Image: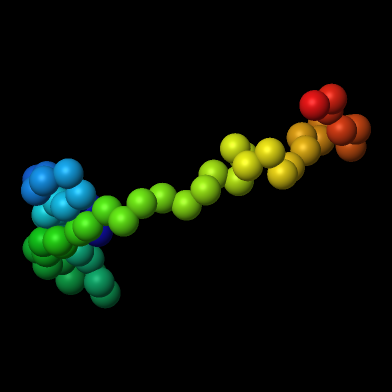
Length: 60
């Protein structure tokens, strides 16, 4: 789908208009969407360690 416009409707809702292409057939669509939140970013969880390209762990 290629979005052509996004119209907010309140703080957590929106209507996204665009063109959906399936099997070389393009049809206009409007998606009514509701934001329910995002997951935890694993890079901010503190449960990973960076490793340099040579395999050595970077200091915390």
